Amino acid sequence: MILAVVGGEQPLNRHGACCLGSLNLNEFVLNPYTKDSKFNWNDFINSIPVAVEALDTIIDENKEHFPLKEQMDNSLNYRNIGLGIMGLANCLMKLGIEYGSKKALDFVDALFDRLFIDSVYASADLAYRRGSFPKYSNVLFDSTIIKKHFSQDDIYKLKETGLRNCSLVSIAPTGLTFMAQYKLF
Image 1: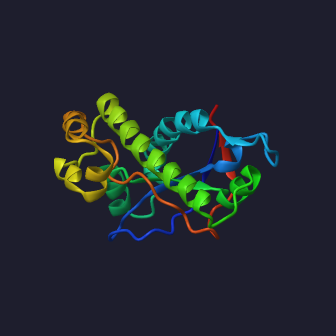
Image 2: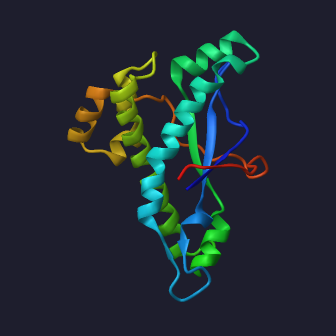
């Protein structure tokens, strides 16, 4: 899996900080441009917790490099990460899916459901191992997006460990994604 680290164009609060990274969807297409092409869901799903942990680790490794103390404090207190994707159009072409088609929309919907759900579980696992972010509150689980993707039983279990990161998923602007790639496995 390759994680591309990106710059930070994201609306944040004053002195906000967010560590952004993208999974390159091109890396998950098997037999590209053939009738046998398919998306490797297993590898995609397995890459999510690795990428979440890598982005969380970058927060600690970078903490001394913020220009302002307030930015460092914000980063450490909320541990915002933004795991996203890049290469969607190329991925769809390799799969033989017309961009904007019903099949493309269904694929993207399934992709982002998986990305969000597995990012939450990965952050909960990190919270279990490393602790929740310092400003954590269970009110996070009252959000509409959480209630849409998780059952009440799942939410109850997630509240027991909390989350390591206040923000988890973000798509960087297309002009800002650059290929400072790190081979994670």
